[in-house]
Structure formats: C-alpha cells, structure tokens
Length: 150
Image (cartoon, rainbow, N blue to C red; front, side):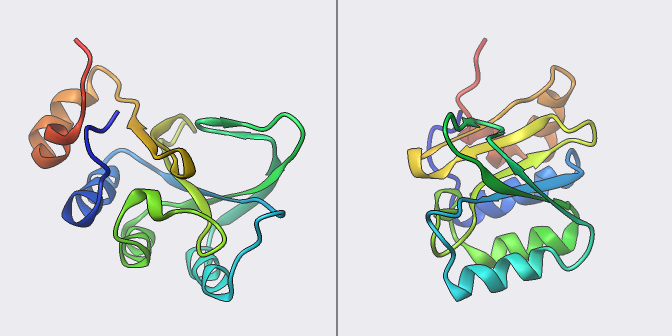
C-alpha cells in the first residue's frame, strides 16, 4: 500500500519501475459511466497494437456482483508507459468518464504487480520476496513511498 498517492515524479517512477517486472497493462471501462472523446482517444492510443478486450465482472482489486465491464489488456512496454505517463499526473486520475479506470500492471503470468482502485483512492504493489530488494535498489523513491509489512 502507498503512504501517499503516486503522483508526478513518483507516478512516473512507478511506471518506469514496472517495466522491469510487468508484461501487460490493464484498464477498465464500465458502460454505465461512459467515456469522453478524450478518454476514447486515449484508449485508442493505448490499444494501437496487441490489445485484448474482454467483458468481465472481476479484475485485480475489484469484483462486480451484478454487472460487467470491458477489461482492456495491452502489452506493457516503453511506448505504453509513456502514454500512461502523459495521460495523467497521478494514479487516482484513472477514473471515468475522462479516462478508463483502475490502472493495473501485470506480470507475464497474469498476476498483479500494481493494483489500483482509483475511485476508492487505493493502490498497492504485490511484490514477491525476490522483487523487494530489486524495487529497493532500482526504484528507491518508490520503495520509500510504500508502507511495507514486516
């Protein structure tokens, strides 16, 4: 869990650090909330290549009981990280209708590395034991913003 909302440099550091651990980025669009034309363009930019879309009732951090949403998964690399960095200044800005919701970064095995539930102002990293020293070494400003257990 983050002690402060990742914004500005910290948000960009989070995206950069994720490049070393993650293979996919995930964003969600709930039909009832809609997207502005700006949000549609952003999603189109993110999904220029290798983007999978599925209708689902769950994604990292969220389970819908009576509804579904469109879940967009795209290959995570420098180009996508740059679009994500330019789109917002803080992780909790990923909210509809201006933007898709709940940015998550996923490892190659599909497990969540970064989970965010933007409208609840909640975001956290799920680090494996072997990842903790790497984050500490490679992303010290990110490590300092985390409330770590143990």
